[in-house]
Length: 241
Ligand code: ADE
Image (cartoon, rainbow, N blue to C red):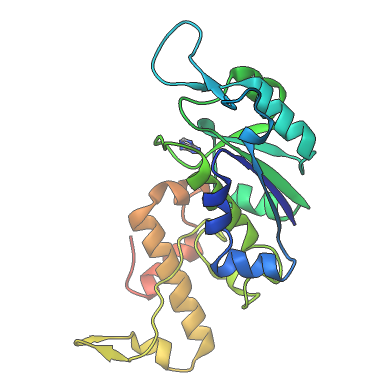
């Protein structure tokens, strides 16, 4: 998978995505990450990339010339996604869509955002990682790259795990435990140590449903509410709602 990232802070991006799971994926050739410095195509001794907004107002806006020039020189993998709080909200579904392709590219904003000709004529879509405003798109780029790359076959050691985790089926993940069996008086649920795989799977499903009902009821709504068999499952495990 090829991922191109356009940023004013290439060192930060390279440092973050050079370690841990992403660094390993790059080392193994599973992730071809190319980081581009938006300043590399800026003109003049000061290599200016931003300017004051027309019409006045606070902050600076990224100029079209250096951004178009940098992107056009790199011929990045499409789609090119502009990162900013006005984009469509990133979620596991978009992560899966991106993971099923050959790659994508991210344009990180800074300051007050991009000149709108960049969003209108250069990027394919705009993406936000949530309803809050960051100082720039770099942290958002880490979120997107990590969420997508870990779905690429081979990146995670345990190939089965992406299917079982939170959001895989529109539900939050069930609770997980490891050793010791008892810690400060808090015991691991007996069922998980029973060796009955069928019962464990049923308990996990009931827990995932109950957690989602309690914490993220809107996710249950999106799925069309609880089915009769889901209600019965929750009843059976004493988690009825
Ligand atoms: N840049 C600033 N805020 C952002 C957000 N919420 N998502 C993506 N990029 C951003």
